[in-house]
Amino acid sequence: MQVMDTQSLIACWELGRRRHPLDRALLLYAAAEPEEDPNSLADRPLGRRNAALLRLRRSLFGDALESHVACPQCGERLEFALSADALLERHRQSCDYARAAGSLRLRLPTTRDLASVAAETEESAAARKLLERLVDTPQPNQSFSKKS
Image 1 (cartoon, rainbow, N blue to C red):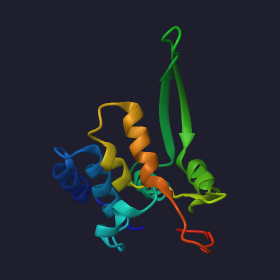
Image 2: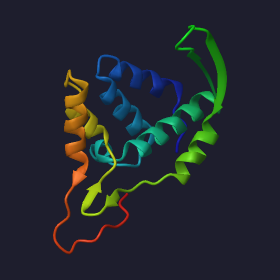
Image 3: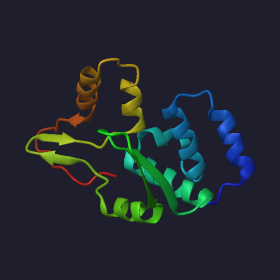
Image 4: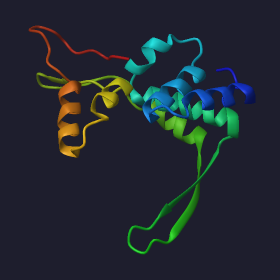
């Protein structure tokens, strides 16, 4: 991956600042993976997209991810640091293909899948619609294989 320079980062920010967050993620994904066809990035699994965005972030700002979370009971703020390298190592160990259970096959969600439910106002309706998109029914005598 090439390191993005400051001018390119600012141009990317300007281009994406009025876009939907999913479109901004794809814009940055294209910047993180310049050798890939930008038209195909919306159809890649979210884990791949997020790993590419994390690598881009690491190249721009370093490995440390200064973070915080508020306690849901008292509101106390807990500060902690994460390592981009450690998170990326966990991603390398995770699966990047669909899972099968009997005659049911679930593929991994993509940015395009999220975009299809982005306007849905009911959480349960969005979840149902998303699940319907992710379930593939195999053809007779079709076997399941790893899919990237």
